Length: 121
Image (tube, rainbow, N blue to C red; front, side, top):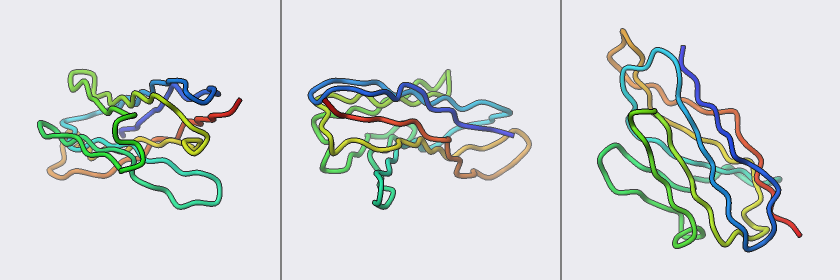
């Protein structure tokens, strides 16, 4: 069994910065695309950023220039560096990854439990 665990969520003031981490653990053979999503109260979950293995990252327009997604493949970890945060960034942030478990020949999309980011003065 594999799982994703996010960390780094916190209460931060507008204009502040925060770095989220998400680590995959378990009997992992390989990890393909990793991504960050977020869901604000009363809103649909939205894709924030993706970073396919060996390819360029992509961002939703609202975070371009402010957020940076990166990954450390040796640790099966994805990060989201967030700067210039605004109240509109308040949401539960979820990581997502396509993971192939040892002994299998396919990838399975896996979700983390989410970490709360609150931007408020």
